[in-house]
Length: 133
Image 1: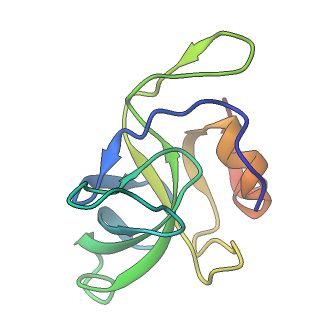
Image 2 (image 1 turned 90 degrees about the vertical axis):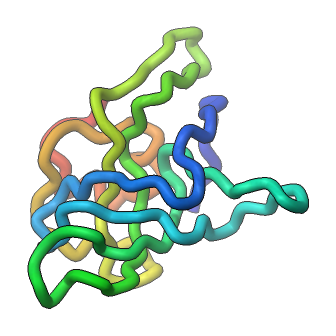
Image 3 (image 1 turned 180 degrees about the horizontal axis):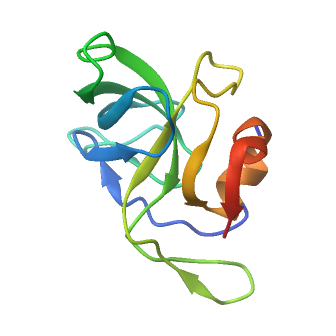
């Protein structure tokens, strides 16, 4: 997993509900843990674009509901700064559900744009994305 070059503000705290942007069967996901992130005592861990999270399916197909699934954050509403000085933000918070921890997506297509930082870090997700912004 590559490092992210942009200084991304962590805009999705533990417990946030994000939409699923793929056709895996999940519609809404609740972030229950952020992998590979250390924080201070009594501080909620937060996620940003390109982060690997564990999420529970809140809304979706009946066989997917109440399941804990791995996911990657691909869009966030909170604006962040890229190395060239531009600021970027998206209309919604979204995540893509993974099959395993190797980065293979469960769905076959991702609806809407995904961030360039997430595409660089997770190439298998970038393959099935329609647009990289």
